[in-house]
Length: 336
Image (tube, rainbow, N blue to C red; front, side, top):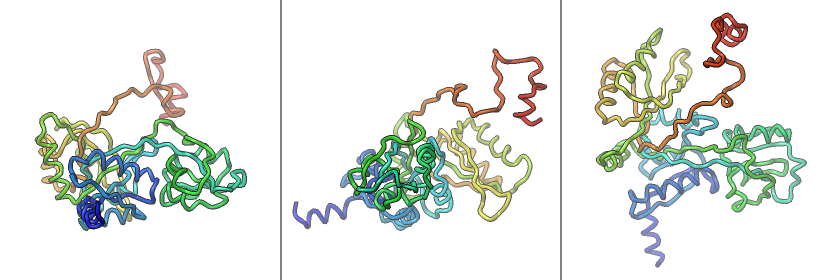
């Protein structure tokens, strides 16, 4: 291929922005997204690393390409800064969701003595998932812009946590593999586009019979007080919608006011969901759909007793006492 043809191919390829540098989990998510969405872009994708998520969101809103951002982790939950940014964004929506298995290796700078390390560095979510290693080695956690940046910029007194690919990309020595606290960790990422474009991208799959969706919705009741949230949730219950997650975020600087973020097993154009949104809007509350994407197969495992936190109250047939409400355990744990 000549240089001119190479340049033309690069110009026609869709830009896919991710949190750099190379070797981040977001980089891997971008690779996965480029493969899963290949049918949407015959010319392929040009993966482009940016320094932070605000740059990614700005580039997407300017129509320069699509963006990939971390959304939710099954250990640490939602990536709150990205969630807040998407709520506030003027012209962004997610139209696809991709997952990446998360394992952390531990690295020191080549030639450094790991016994002399005093600092652990990684993205804040990475540090949160490697607490046991940090405690065992008596390290001071210091957040980095990304896990790959922590490995790239590692200092002589640091241990960095990052994906296995960082061992090949940067001047580091691996001193531990899979050092995260929990096995089976996964992070899901949203692929973002301008809202109008996201809607058009969803037209093809929504026309396919049997296609199911998940939607992420943000809600802000304009009136606060007793029963407001319960009444809002009643709308979705009465519509027969299955809610799979629900969290709140404070409206910054306004004590007592919140936005609520819910995920549903439905798409906004389905009649029951559409009718629920109409009722909410006509009631005067604020609503915005943050993302709609094809529904993933999701297991529904039971929560077994060994998964429960310490303390608390749980009744079953084997331990159900007639006077359990007067027991010391109930009084202590339920504080009544």
